[in-house]
Image (cartoon, rainbow, N blue to C red; front, side, top):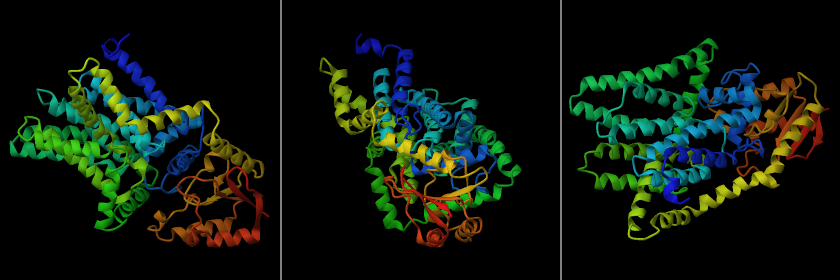
Length: 498
């Protein structure tokens, strides 16, 4: 079977993409065949999901600054099958993402180029996404569906979308920002271009149709979330932690110089400069083209996404939200290279080899990570450590006892039946904007004296087990007088109350 036969129909391609997605998902820390320590962010999200299943409320009982939909999705997975349930939902979301990656890529090349574009984008996505069951993996389908609709709107000859797709666009927008609020620039750029085009061309009725459909989509997601927050009495907590806290964290990181530094850091990470440069190229070369507004909207949304990402974070995994912009850019680039080999006999093979060499680093890393499923390694040990530490805590405590973990992580909680003694189950400077949060945490621990205090001591690459003197000094003094060491194995230092 040659390449021409393989790429002859979409059914074969979709089957291949599902299998390839499964390969990517082997690298998830929730892989049922190879369970490992999750990333620090995911540990918080899963702990909150576990709390929701046990009757607790996000924000009020377990503070954090992400959208409620993230925790509710994780809670559904946890309810169904614990970590395996979360992995299944993650896999399902990734399949949806990949489907619309390919559908979008088809606007920029034939089946062969679209398939290659999708596959290489997945390799790059894997390089970003060492955080699983997090904001990136759950918001990705909504981002990808939306860029597909925007692309379809501009690049189809009739330049229109039906009313249901407008509703879907609003649905995806609301779902995405209720997972991670700073992904809104993807819609901002394209919608601004559509809005001003309608105003300039005096298409007011059409603009009204667009706004109505988009708003209906917003309401479909927004009303149930509003009811969940208001009926549970946590809407004020939501605004405090997600809106005020998110803005404080996002725009309180530094001045213009630091933002510019972050901008170039983000651009330089894992080929992120490709969609940025391709966007500039399209604006220059397509200025008089009929579809210029698509290319302008693409670059505007891409630029805004990079810019807002630079305000708050230079963490690698956060850049995964840029992947929707990679799909058109890399598929287009594949077309350029394919044309350069057009006079060659084996032009498809040469194109594949060229991009395998270009993206050799993410390809090798992805295959290496996937191979860990079938061999023993340090990652395997990290998962066993967590399970063993949780069993040790349960064995030396009784139902109703409380525990606390010190540091900016929540690694231990999903592996024990004991609940945290304070709603500040992880402690980080991002809570400093909440009045008296530190005093409340210290009061909870000193007053109720948890049965076990845990400190993660194994390497987590980002030092999220650090002791913060402002938050932890009183706790360390309590440990000296009222606790003794239970264990220093399994990557944890565990103190048990005397």
